Length: 164
Image (tube, rainbow, N blue to C red):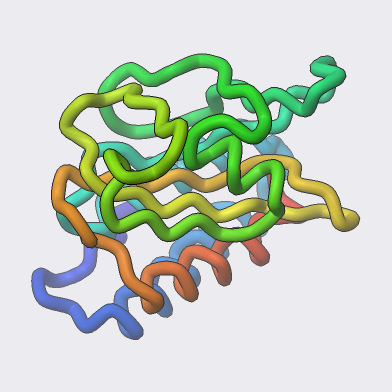
């Protein structure tokens, strides 16, 4: 049985160091990308306070436009497909850049899969200079995510690039 839950009030640098170590331990010897994404979505749900959705959208290899399709996640049911360039996830996939959005309602073209979401952090997962997925974190609180969260999830995305 795995119990990676951090102590309440763990400082963010320590939290992300421990999240990365736990993610590495869970995925290091597993070749199945879906299994790894599922465990990491659950791990982020356990580790990160004040989130209402943690998970992945994958670039659909059968889509000529690079559409994103829902991957493993923790939270309420979600939008299944997101066009590249649409919403926060689509913007991250199109630009290959992290999207740190303090107020999703002010984001042009935001896709409201969950009306309770107020802020979002979306980090592209890159392999061979191509976006293969995005890690999506939602929170019901405005401005929930900051640069420390961005840096921590970017490190996670980099580590996962060869494991999903």
